[in-house]
Image (cartoon, rainbow, N blue to C red; front, top):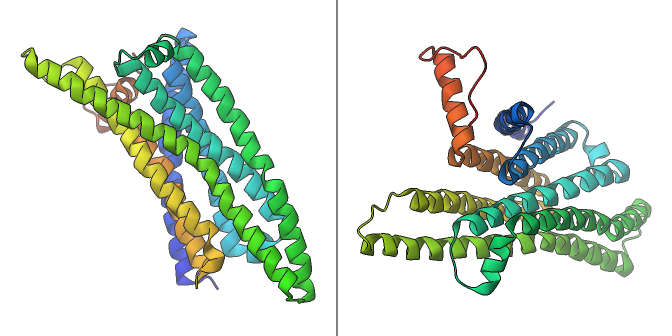
Length: 316
């Protein structure tokens, strides 16, 4: 019989999975339809679309992991299923984080204004910089997945020793090494976290300087440039705080063996991990004029206040 905690866990996972699929599916549909109509997609739309698609796959992986943990705990904890889930989850997780980081760097280079030669060099070559970042993100995601090899080997050794119940000092050393390698795997999330902090700091500094100049010149603080600064800063700030929450949730889940109730720790971590990509995608929609306009028109059509156009929604 399913316990109450398992039922609540699956209920929360189901809600966040549904929200994430709807929000990211909407982003993919709008940008995909726009590309189909004009046969062209901007670099920011390309990043956002791939971010949405990666999040859809990530949400499916997390939901599958949650169902296996509740209904098939033995299969979930055994070697092969765990390794398969870890490989797919690790790759999609790091790819997702790096795509969001690339989007933040793109906004920063496009909107922020500095006279430093290095920043100007990057700004003039923003497309090339982002393309190389995307390629680097793909390679780093593959690298983080390959790094699981040693962890899998140690896990197999530990399962074999545990099966014989030979709880020796060697076993305890191997277990400590396994936990250390598992914890060090979380450090793959630090580079995008540092890059996001840097882009957020640059945008804040640029926005503050820009606002002071507008006030000195008697210009309204709500001019388009200032609004663009604020919009980009909200998106990057939300991602920064969500990735911090995501990182802490992952630490809780990965350190569950050290906690009194390991299964509960994994459940809490999994719920938070599913929460972050869904919420950030909602913020992306609110911060993107095309997505926001399409969403508002869709709501008006549904409520009957606006008759649907015969040629479909306007995406520009």
